[in-house]
Image (cartoon, rainbow, N blue to C red):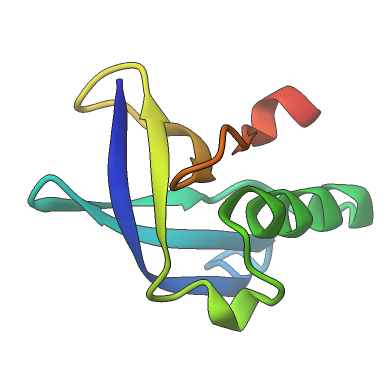
Length: 99
């Protein structure tokens, strides 16, 4: 299923166990969910995630993501967000497929 969403915020930093991670927080269809939470300790993974999100959404910096509209792809209503995409263009990013 594909939904339109608004990016409400972002996080790039260390989680509770000191592991570098990132999230894009989204609101859609009356609810909210995050995209991300992956282990980004390897430099390639960190670059791939940040660059992939920026390219898909159409932003030139992490700080400019908040307030942008995008699309999200999920397998089910309660499942995780699998991919994030541009609001109009057919441009998607799925981190699991880059690994």
